[in-house]
Image (cartoon, rainbow, N blue to C red; front, side, top):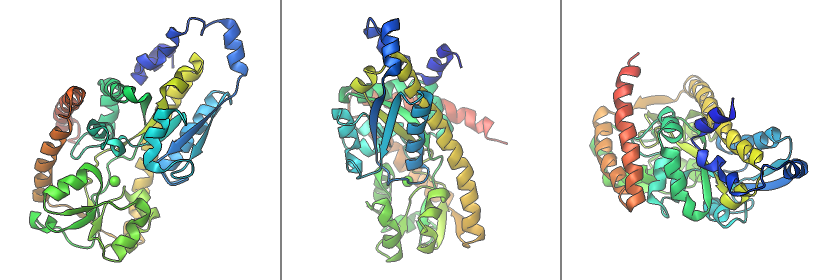
Length: 359
Ligand code: CA
């Protein structure tokens, strides 16, 4: 790909222009010196070490950076808790104590309510649309603006595709069945459930199985067939409901410390961005292939009963979600611009989807 096309594809011209501030960064002498230098970075993640799809996606990104740079930039990946606790990834990369992080932006919604728009919001954009909005529709530039005060450069790096509504030990036949439902469902989806009369529970991924099996909760969402099969959740619940209304296409992120990025020679900056975009596409392809494979195993080998949430329930959840999502986009002037951009993209895309998904 020609560099100009690549920059356009990244929607990241502002990032790639950073070298322009250094007057000598294109000089032959410095280029030679830079090409001999080996730079070592650390990447902290919010995922258990080696976690399928997400953790391995972060490792793939690090490998790509190493390979594309011919070993000049080496990135060592740390799983959650190995270097820093998972929910400190944002602050650590922001402070510069590590150069890079991998996670999901909705983890930071306590600090930045509008951050959820860059991972997933209930009844929001799907994976394909997220890439469209972020890379071509102005989303990435807004994301950069949101993270800039924290000294961070965000990039989309992966997508789980649409998730499943979750594992239930109780059938959901009407809106009434949501009342009193104790369910592991974090983030905005959890708040929607609360407004629908349920009780959202915050339970770490690794503890979902026992909470469900012991009956401490009635239901739990995690990711989709690929990750849920690996966690053995089918052994702890009767029904596997779809669709994942709360996470229609969750984008994962890399965050890069701005000073560390700007200290790189220009070609390594380009390589970091190119590696992010490659890993972004690769993870979605992996989920697409593995989810379909895992669903077949769940149904055919483990006898899982797959059920669709009733339309009445989905309509009710959607009404609550739309109000909540709008609230998330009202906290300040930038949040309002993010919400407006997301909503405008979604409205246009919904019209197109009605036609394009009619096959
Ligand atoms: Ca989830």
